[in-house]
Length: 347
Length: 283
Image (cartoon, rainbow over all chains, first blue to last red; front, side, top):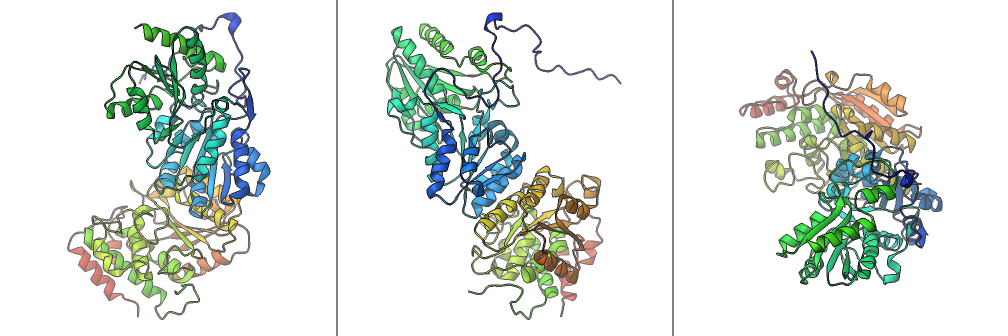
């Protein structure tokens, strides 16, 4: 019997598009997202949790062998008796967090976004979310924040997690927001999935006087030609893109929507209704099932029919490589965003 | 408010309790004309020992903080646990006719949101022991001396997540955790022994670091001793009792039926099964 081999994904052996002089090395997994010369804050999630734990005896931390890589080690060092190292075992990480929540505790469980969303889904769904237990799942390496390839690139985590009833889903932008959101979700009943940036995290929103409010989208910058609706670190990128476009006479508003679920459909519809602006969603996530499609659905349901474009990752398993190279390749860089906006405005 | 524990005086014997659990389960099966009656009859002795010998609880306050927690992983065994909780007075007997009906507090698969005393939502197998690990950790944090019991099935031993929890319970020295495995050698597609459970269950758990016992799960004296051992064992280890049970135990004409995960009972056979059970009522 002859069984011919199946065709598989495209070969990566072909010559790539990066010019010889511009090739960068893949950064280590533990490297911070941003080395673009911004002000940074170290481990905002870990420090916020340590601070919260001073007054909240119910807060405990669990990790599946990734405390150092989710900044939970800061909490583990400050409160060793309240930290549970669960080993490389995501099912029991989530189930045990559910058990601790049943006994009155508020567990913060950390791992990488790929492992929580792909591997532990049934345990989050049935042990945690179905009973609306207050487990806070905080995950590093969301979307395209590592060059290690698809095993570590959670490009579909928001799509997966949005499908789960009861679950609040948050995609914060920077250190300021991670600090405030960590405090907010500790106060919120029910389960939460929050994306994390770890290590040296840029401080961007502070200068805009922004304060995170769960479930609220907020205008960070106003403008008359383009309305960016964005979440996560893409809000940093569109703020830079808006500056660049302003120099070319294009006026851009930025509506930051860190709460992906429940989405602030009211504010989004109200902003999109303001006439004359091209609506562009920008997200560190696949085009499928993330912020962009959530916004599109909200606008359709609200009867808002406006020109709409999406900046997002393609529905593909992405390449390995250096993060700046990949962000350029897949359109998340400031330069690529700016260029596409100009093209779209000329259409 | 009365707290039930082994010291509670009662003139109802353990065999009478097991008999009543079987009878309640048959009455519920009759309502729907179907149900996992084979499992319920098989596990009745294990539940009688749990609820009328080993566990401490308050029937009129199922969420009493001092209670021993009983986690039913295997949602389809709900009929058995309802039967036991009715006998224990946690659920009212007059709700038996509502079993599995619209708006009933006793749905076909056990879920925490529906039923007083049903601690967790089971059904997606491989969850219960992991949740039990977390609850046992939580009880220790609160210095609450209660035990967490988790009833799981032989088929559930095929789930990798069960073994994550097995390892975790040892890592955290959870001597307040008692796993009970109902080993009836039947899962959906046939005998468990033909699937993933290749045997040597007790040595396997012991090798992982558990205090493991294997008993005849239809022998009340053996169960009583095993539960006492599990509760009183001195080492800082989690405890497991592998209970070898017989599907349909107590109703011989069903016991003889070809072994099957989902026992088919004809409409006229429910009354016959109840009559057979009544003949064997313990004095």
